[in-house]
Length: 420
Length: 199
Ligand code: HEM
Ligand code: FES
Image 1 (cartoon, each protein chain N blue to C red):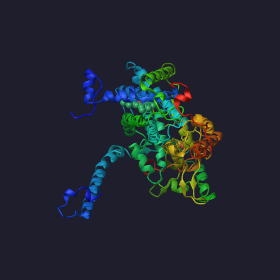
Image 2 (tube, chains in turn brown, purple):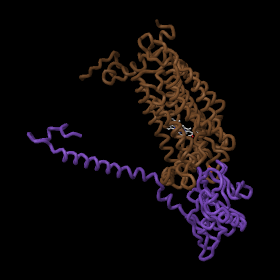
Image 3 (cartoon, rainbow over the protein chains, first blue to last red):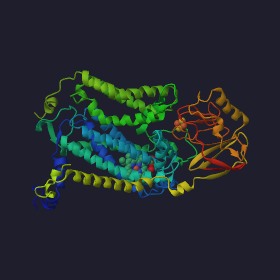
């Protein structure tokens, strides 16, 4: 062997590591990996998200062993899981509420990145991979929700796939192709199941790249300045392995409250009614984690066309779809919209305020997404939607130009008065 | 692509012919692309409607028991089809719009009542009372209400979609709300005066 790598491990571990340096890799990336010493608890949510992904895969694989993807059998196979399979109820409630907790963790993780400017140079690609993960998660959760084949499953699938019909000219053939027929039916269910099984592993792959990119440039931190010396960092283990474990335990307690005391609080009762293609429920609402996007989708209510003719360039349906996709895809360009050299909102007095206004706006959109699209709700949705985009395309670029940041500390250890 | 990257192929003292190289390279690449596309096609096509799905594409319905003013819903291709035996008032209300408003005014998807029911005929006999439509809202695919006597029928006494509030008139034309098109008319034929085949 002409390997230049000489392992520092002994015994069997050393024998393996000499031939396949996985232990050295783990040691470098998760053991001695120098990590800024000033993380706050918001830095727990990356590790929590990864844990949730693995938990979703674990619970999903076992659910899959009891689940049948067939329009005549799916609903009952899930009911059997709930009533007859040993601990089936627990596995299902873990998976159902796990999806919610996974999104909760990822949303906190993402807003953390926005507050502390983690998307800025040199972490743009890291951030972009994160936005990609969010898209994949949305697709996965949407298709998973269809599997139990309740009323909400069926109608969510119908309404969302119908969005594609907004595409000019090829819209209808695309929808027929997506369905594998002329309505959401068995072919749709079986392909959603196949993809629901596949996509989490794709997510896992992208998460791997996300973490690999992180380990090239290192973590950001609440001050948003790069560590300059050893005084600014701590080895990942034991400091952050412990802090992450503690945060994870607290998070899991909240998760357990949902699983054991209010397992259906986040779900919709209509999904306990078997799917009925002949009857639409009076109110179609998506899961909470999709509500802001749903509100944006519905906020576009006019057709844009050539005046005084019947030619419609962008129908309200198409407009809504474009807005909804853009509301997430805007993340891809965020690193270039925000050109302020200062990362952390701690030193950006105005950005800090607008950040919280944006958070409030997102929550407001979530509330509006749960309300019927009538009367005053429509108008408020439109204002909230307009502000959502204004935040990215107006507020952020203008602040980058005109905001006067506070002086940034020279180093992490100086700022926190330790390690000196 | 530069030929100098592989000088070993040129005979000593002779420059390789760059045009020939590029040609071979492009031809090979094009073959590869065509091959990939051809191989990919079955994967994509397999997701479209299968033969058995297409075979279920016709449904026969007996209309004998549907009195004027009544409506029935039947399943066709996994979707509801609305069949309404319209009263003379329903038809008048629909036709009034054709005339009153002129063909293009007030209608988002302009169609006369006559075109909506042109397939409702047996031999020479026209039967505009039979309005037969796919009962799927053209907005995002919910099922509008208005089939049952007790249902809400919306502002135009036809159908009302509860999802986002589309109102359809007695010819199934979109009159108010977000839906872009009139309720679709499937292909159907009258086999007898009271028997139809949809699809
Ligand atoms: C990114 C990770 C995942 C997310 C966000 C996710 C999300 C969901 C959601 C929201 C449901 C509907 C729960 C319900 O209302 O009953 C569901 C169901 C299901 N998922 Fe997943 N899932 C993930 C990973 C997986 C994996 C990896 C598998 C299989 C290996 C899987 C298998 C299933 C099965 C069989 C069901 C139907 C049973 C049921 O509805 O409880 N999931 N998933
Ligand atoms: S689906 Fe009927 S109004 Fe939206």
